[in-house]
Amino acid sequence: MIVPHVVNFGLLFGAITSWGLLYPFLQSKRGQWYHTDSRTSLSGMNGYKIFIAVTMIITEGMFNFIKLLTVSSIDLYKKRQQNDSGKIKYMLTSPSLSYDDRRRLDVFLGQRIPLHVPVAGYIGCAIVCSVVIPWIFQHIKLYHMALLFTILPVFTFCNTYGTGLTDWSVAQSYGRFIQFVIAAWVAVPGAVIASLAACGVSVAALNVSSQAMQDLKTGYMTSTSPRAVVAGHIYGVLIGSVIIPSIFLAFEANAKSTAPIGSKDSEYSCPSAAVYRAIGLLGKRGVKELPDHCITLCLVTFFMTLAIETIRLVSQRRNWKLHSFIPCMIAIALPFLAGPYFTIDMCLGSVLLIIWNKRNRPHAELLSSAVAAGLICGDGLWVLPSSVLSIFNVHPPICMKFLSSGKQVDIADSFLNTLGPHGRT
Image 1 (cartoon, helix red, strand yellow):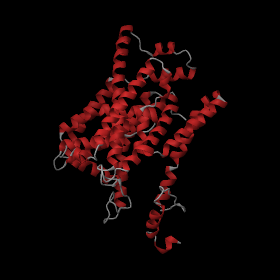
Image 2 (cartoon, one colour; image 1 turned 180 degrees about the vertical axis):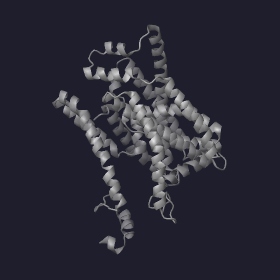
Image 3 (cartoon, helix red, strand yellow; image 1 turned 60 degrees about the vertical axis):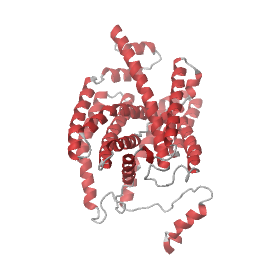
Image 4 (tube, helix red, strand yellow; image 1 turned 30 degrees about the horizontal axis):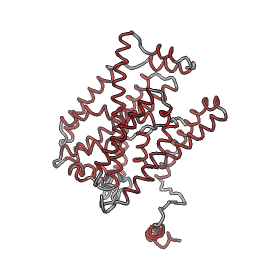
């Protein structure tokens, strides 16, 4: 209900395109283009999913990065010529802004953080990490970290832009892509450890930036100073650097000695660990380990995304009506990675908001954000009781699963055979 309709329906279109058309086609090529069904390997379907989606996301992100850099440079030049901050001009050219919007704009732009502060902070953190991390993980070198921190702002912008549009971060996908590149670059014994270290740094940076985007959006809506939001982030990172290792040590102390934390047999297993290790091994072996035609599909996706973004930009500049019906490619790419399940929820919110606007537009404009916030908070608060129930091994009395046609009997029989005589009754 908060996300624009074109983004929500773009998510649905991406879900239909990927899980309804492309993935069934790729599954039909098993045995010809690839020969594994392992979820921890990029040599099978997982390779197509990750690389096609990441290509789509990075292409649009780079396109918007270049566009933003060009527009910002031109705008900065004009402002210096006119000696104008831009805020007054925006208010004068937007007379329809309400008092609340003008107040939000005044707080948000009037208490901006000077540009040199985040730049200096980033350079300082990059220098510290480039020295400390190679000292801890000797397989990754200082020049690897230096290059990583040089290109990270581009990936950070792409991910933050997508998070601002869809409220959904794909930092893990960027991390896997960077891990693959670093592993292929190192390509010696220890490349997996080096790539995992680079992936961890990348995911941490991307998650912080995307979370900052969400909090700044909330701060704008609540007329909170951006400086207070950033200060809260800094305090949170400092507190988290103490609390999170303590929580890990607590879980590790309770783990069985025969099943270390994170292992497959542990009570606190980490299934994604095998995925990241497989990505590192695949990167070390090179692009030739990817499934057949994966690079070709990525190139097609690249040019298709570039063409759609160009049409979108031209239609926006010329005020064509077509612009309102062209979804952003990041919205289309998200279901490729996250699955199609959440797209129905997003579209349902848009449909309800459209009906609400038809019946009572002022009422909808006033309360839709509050209703959406309540739904988000309710869903988030359920994580706490769910975690408590999991700790005490409380399981739901009913388990439901939907199977594809033609496989019901085989899968049901294999599942029932694992339950024993008591489970079958």
